[in-house]
Amino acid sequence: MRRGLLLLTAIVLSASAAGAQSNAAMAESLFRDGKKLLEERRFDEACPKFKESSRLDPSSGVELALGLCYEGQGKTASAWGAYVTAASLARRDGRHDRELAATKHAEALEPKLFHVTIQVAPETVAVAGLSVKQDGVLVGSETWKGAPADPGTHTIEVTAPGRKPFTTTFEVGSAPQATVRIPALDAGPSVAEGSLVASPTPSHLERTVGYAATGAGAAALVVGTILGLVALHDASSAHTLCPVSPCGSSDGISQNNSAGTTADWSTAMFVTGAVAIGAGVTLVLLDRRSSDSRPATGASVTPVLAPGYAGLSARF
Image (cartoon, rainbow, N blue to C red; front, side):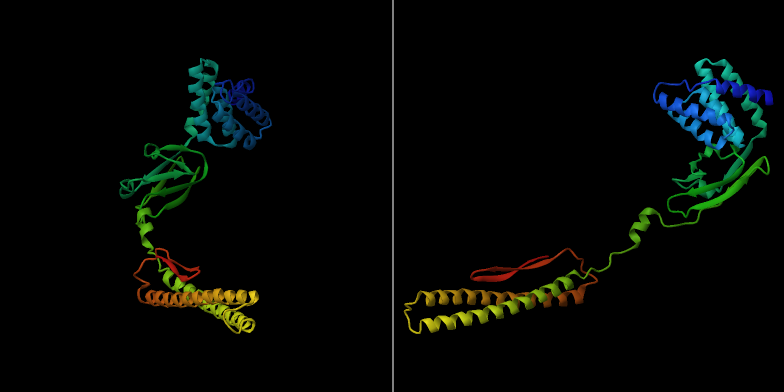
C-alpha cells in the first residue's frame, strides 16, 4: 500500500491540471499551489486549493491530488469519491496510467469505508417538499441507505412545509455502519398559514387626523383674532386721517383699503378655524365608535384660503 501511495504521489506531482480551457489559468495556479502544500503534508491547506481547481476546471490530475489530500486528512469517503471521479475522467481522456492508479486506490479504500443509513419515518417520507440535508448538503432518498461517510461528527437537518424542522447529530467511525432515525415531524404553521395568523391592528387614522384638524382650526382662530386686531387698528388710523367721507387723504384711503383686506382675511381664518374644529371633533367621535371595524384607507384635511373664500379640502 505504501508503494502505491508513493507511486500515486509521483503521478500527482508530475501532473498538471490539464483539463478544459475555461478558467484553466486560475485552475492551474491553484493546482500548483496545492502540490507544494501537499509535498509539505499541509493537507488542510492543500485540499481547498485542489477542490477549487477541480470546480474551475475538472481533470483527472486534480481529482487524483484531491483524493490523496483527503486521504491524508483521514477523510476516507471523500478520498474514495475523488479517486472514482479521477478514474472516470482519466478513462475519458485516454490517460490509462491515471485510471489504473485511481482505480487501485479506490479499491484499496473501499473495505475501510464507513456507511450511514438514514431511516425516515413513513409519515415524514410522504410529506410533499421534504428536504433532508447532511452537513448542509441535500441528500436524495436514493442515498439514504448505506452511503459512504467520513469519520467524525455529522449533522442531519430535516424540513418540510407545514412541519417543525428536525435536527440531530451523529458520529461516524466507531462502527462500520451508522444509522440515523428521523421521526415523524411535528405539525407546525406553514408559510401560507403563518401569513394569515396576525390580523391588522386598528390604525386610529381618523382620530389622528381629527386631532390634527382640531389643532389646525384652533391655530386658524388665533390667526384670525390677530388679523382682526390689525384690521381694527388700520381702520382707526384711517378714521383719524379721514374723519369725513369722501376722504381727501391718500394715506387715509390706503389705510382704509388695508383695513378692509385684513378684515377679509380675518373673517376667512375664523371660518376656516370653525370648519376645521368641527371636522376634527367629528372624526375623533367616529373613530371612537368604529375604530375596530372600520379599515384605515388614508385621509387628509387641508385648509383652503383665498380672498373672499375659506374652507377645508378633505380626502378619505
